[in-house]
Length: 345
Image (cartoon, rainbow, N blue to C red; front, side):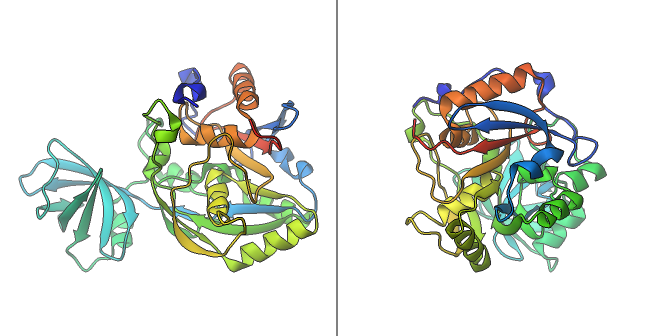
């Protein structure tokens, strides 16, 4: 398939710049991947579409304050976006500057904390903080939340809360698993009181999630790699639920990608690793029957993933309906609940 097959026109005013007043106050579009039926709802209605014994899988990654300002030894200003912390002092980072720093050079972060540029790795730089302050503490003190490029305001205290899920606990992401932003604790309590089972995976979302596919033939695209963990307790819960005839719902494409990465052999296996799984139409899903997700960027790998899940034509129709119905798009926007298409396109 061609990248242009996943393009669409989105009026700029439908890109949500701020979240809904309440986390669960967004709209919810339901799409049946088999029939193509579309229905409009409110997110607060979500529990009525799930049955006791069903499982919701959440991504518990926590967004780090990955955007840093600094300067080079020459005095020129730079901006860093930490893509992946590697240990307490080292990280891979994007660096924006008038001229890229050379390997071996020093840069200064915050109020003058030094770091060494070790080497360049494709689009990223390996840096090492030359100070006793641990990297994550440095980010908390001097960093800013890395809002997506289509959100035009700088991150403030409200974003520090709302661009983070209420269950976030494992630091490492540079973008939020946005389907989870709709859940507040009251919703989680309602679901569990109804007999819905909840489990977690971790996938640290990278900045590459916002990158459009730049090749015409999608088979030529290479995904960025992300770190994931699927705990044994999550695998056991999923296996028991499926054996009892219950459905598995991934809350977000990141939770789905973690699960499908852990099931590449055909059997869901607990563990940690790196994944560059690229899900496109024709993919056979191993674990998930439902997907809760937001609306995605044109020509993005996530548009390809949801098209694989619910059918290319059904997704096109659902997005056209959402635009006509003035749904709010992207990270702070509204949600979709997709039932998996059983026959491949």
